[in-house]
Image 1: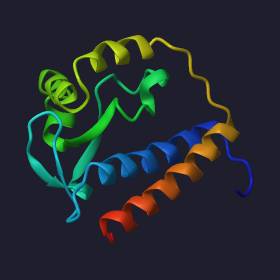
Image 2: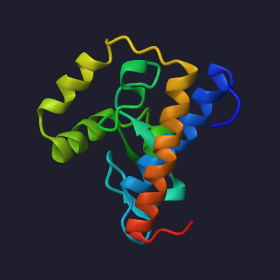
Image 3: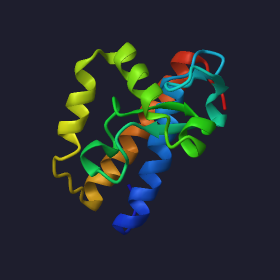
Length: 138
């Protein structure tokens, strides 16, 4: 895994890798995703990894059910379009997911440098597997 890096740089690196994972997870074989909030179709590279519960809550920051492909308009300029996001989450996971995420956001989650490194390696492998499975090259 290489030399140990500080927590801030590891968190930033994991954020970038996790974002790629979520967007590729939500993409079809041609690399296109549907925005969880408004339904707009965008290429995974033009989408954001939107968080229903703000990523300042570490308990849900890397929760895969809390994170979904979202168009940049909804995520950046419409404050996440939470009403549309909630509807999208309910359609995708069922009505209980909203309460589960609200409870989980209050859980304490403090990751060590080693935890970050493990998660980085895991998501890098999962990205490779998804790319291979879906045939997404770039």
